[in-house]
Amino acid sequence: MANIAVIDYDMGNLHSACKGLALAGATPHITKAVADLESADALVLPGDGAFDPAMRHLRETGLVEPILEQIARGKPFLGICLGLQLLFDGSDEGVEPGLGIIPGRIRKFKKEPGITIPHMGWNQLTLTQPNCPLWQGVSNGDWVYFVHSYYAEPADPAVNAATTTHGTQTVTAAIAQDNILAMQYHPEKSAPAGLVMLANFVALVKAQTPAAVG
Image (cartoon, rainbow, N blue to C red; front, top):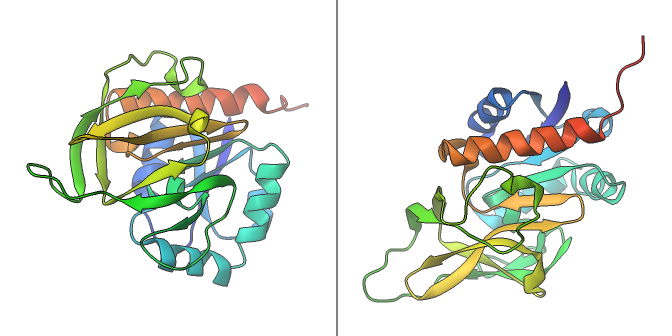
């Protein structure tokens, strides 16, 4: 069974993320204990809300260094929505430094005629890393559910695992780099494609978890 720590920093869609992971076959638990992050088979960083308060909460709860340490050790990591944005150096939404794992910055959507900000609703994915483990059973053009006013602008576009469009802007929808996977959209609200992606993450975690002895 995949034991997944869902990081609690007093913000985010914790219970809906847990429900989606449980449906995908994992054993998720909400925690802010460092020992739980160390013992878990994988980490999930969900999130709704603003960049600066989220980073302050992570720092105040002493979770920044443990998260960085577990990622550096190669533990599977999944960021969801704000949990993707926090991986970057910083955001135009505020002044706090981000986790700095993925070089780049979070930008605000440009206003255009005929589009709304926030970008809210169903949009199609363009898969840019066909071999990304999230995409097993997922098709180019599948629909997922977004709610965001800011988007990631990675320094190296090669980290983009998928993009989407809002108006004339093509932006990051998902990233994949080594053991780090993250989605700007909400997979738990993007059934059936989103649940397939969560199941793929759980399968990845199980494949990397040593079998119990006894």
